[in-house]
Length: 261
Image 1 (cartoon, rainbow, N blue to C red):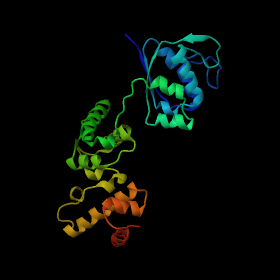
Image 2 (cartoon, one colour):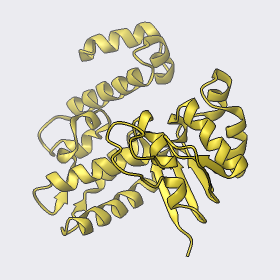
Image 3 (cartoon, rainbow, N blue to C red):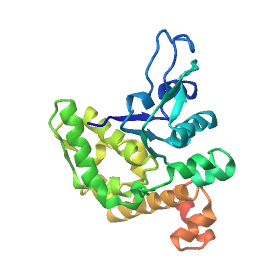
């Protein structure tokens, strides 16, 4: 049975990544009270998954390249050369090709890693996956916390599908976990969603029938959609007007009438 190791390079301080990957001798750094095996040693003969590899410093990149090229490394604080037979799988949300151009990522390491690239589209480009992912995360989180999985209102799913998800899967997972932890009943509604998601609320879903007139609901929808377009263009009114298909002056008038600053 082959071993499988993993390490999140973004979640580990840069000065500790090296020791985590390549083992350390006793006294190699403050707190190193004993010799420790690193990830390459633990995964020897198997596979090591390096998540967020674009967050590694150039110094660590050089040592990883040596392992991939020559199959050996030295412990932090040691002189003995050790062998490592490890298959490396790497992932990142950064554009490594651009990082190579800017000098932030080694070109030779990039070519070593870029043997069989698999591009995973951002979550905003596969919105149909969101309900399936929400249900999967909910089951996983509830099983781990010995809780019954709540029902998500259809309006919640529609709203989640409208959000941009800059943090992709991790952001969605964290939101689902938050909703489940804070849930007071067996259903999760639009009212349970955090405030930052409210700009995408469908008024028909969030407003109780009979509480507002159709004109008021239309005004709320217009305000929120304009706010979304402004957010998309970082507040650039000219660009937002293009997204809305209207003249800039008319958008200014509409914003003033709706109380949008």
